[in-house]
Length: 292
Image (cartoon, rainbow, N blue to C red; front, side, top):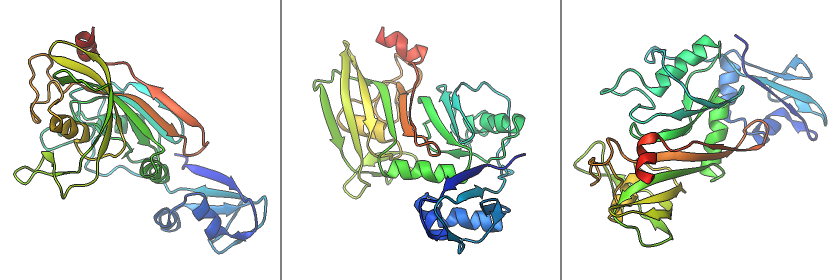
């Protein structure tokens, strides 16, 4: 297996350590390179982070090989790949599939199937899922093929440079065309799983745009400005428009056998090339049938 590596060009004089920091290489990543079998090369020669750089020097970071933990079993299964390169894997997750294994569903998760894909193609990476989806939720999931890439994607999320847009069906007739739900979310005292809007919760913000109104439900578009657990589900229930099919937060399953939520668009900056990327996924048939 060939390890993942990145090459940068020094823009000026200074210590290598400072240049690595400016390129987004974290202290944790440097430690893994130093003690995990990686290398830092300047113009092809291995050096330490105290090496003085000159303008135009070629700096190559060779990241250590990663291994899957014993707890994740590689499994055959269908994997709908939207985009793949040396750094990223973007897939379209079906509904009723866990993103990662759980006690209730220890096999068949997206993670299990991606592990098999990595194994089959000799990709030296463990699993770094940058954007998780609930079991019921379908749509786009972003996976990093390296710890450093995952770190860079996490920074994008913190700096709101990564955008996820969802489509959903909600109970009732939504009246406003566009609005923002700003309400803190925390764990419900009586439940391990359930969340709720509460004064001592974490700041959470969801943008909502109405697409179409039907007799008993509405079709809406959603944009997450924060990434709290169950954020969309909790916020929509909070305004008395729970997701169709979300029986945990007040919806019913009379029309659909899962919560009617789909990650339709994913926009991000490629952590290596700096290129803006946009990915799209059509609604799954069960939601599309209700929209028609």
